[in-house]
Length: 80
Image 1 (cartoon, rainbow, N blue to C red):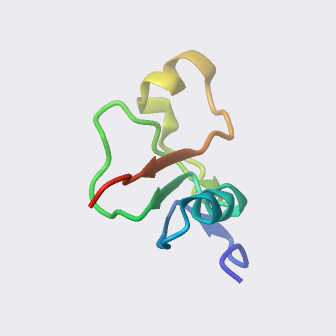
Image 2 (tube, rainbow, N blue to C red):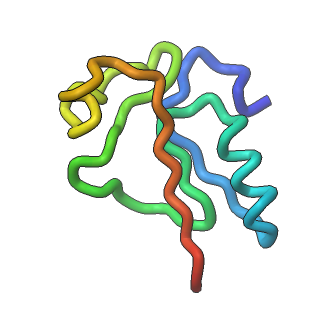
Image 3 (spheres, rainbow, N blue to C red):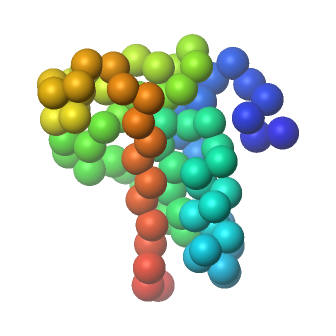
């Protein structure tokens, strides 16, 4: 259901089981997925989505080297 959209800029996954949260994060069709956290992005971090949200990576460090890759950024909060 989460992937049933024309867009895929960002998503958040919350859960007690970190392994399951990471499996879910990798399955999401979004360019930036946060696990057990929310908030802003890190300067220089790739920021572009999938599908019709696929613009923006060109201003990241990765984008300067690789053009428009279908990369995914996953941020994880390990401790409370």
